[in-house]
Every structure is written in C-alpha cells, then in structure tokens.
Length: 75
Image 1 (cartoon, rainbow, N blue to C red):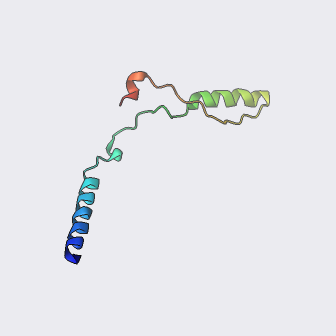
Image 2: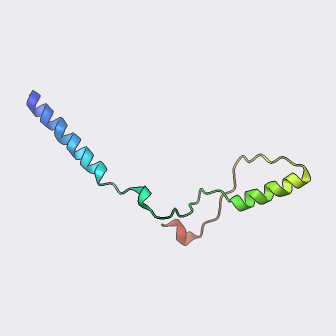
C-alpha cells in the first residue's frame, strides 16, 4: 500500500511538472500590443493641462481607456 501510494504521488508530480513545462511563455512576445485596459495617456495629459491652467484639481476615479481598433483586439 505504501509503495503504491508513493508511486501514485510521484507520477502525479511528474505529470504536473510536465504540464507546466509545456505552457507557452507570455514573455516571449517581442513587442507588447496595446490592450483594451491601457490608459489613454494623451487624453489624460490634455485634460490635466487644461485643468491646471484653469486652477482646477483633477482626481481620476476611472481613468479613460484608449480605444483599440477591433482587428487588434483578437490578437
């Protein structure tokens, strides 16, 4: 019983490690494409610049997100 339990645990560990090793790495991508969740930094800078000229303090609760073309969303 004890030997078969050890064999089972070792085989499950080997299968688990093999499954993790076969996963593709996301860091292998050459250049990161923009996602839907990227902030629209140009718009944020524009609004803050105009607000500063007018003496208004801007506090972003939900930062505006950049619009990504629909064909880029699938990649």
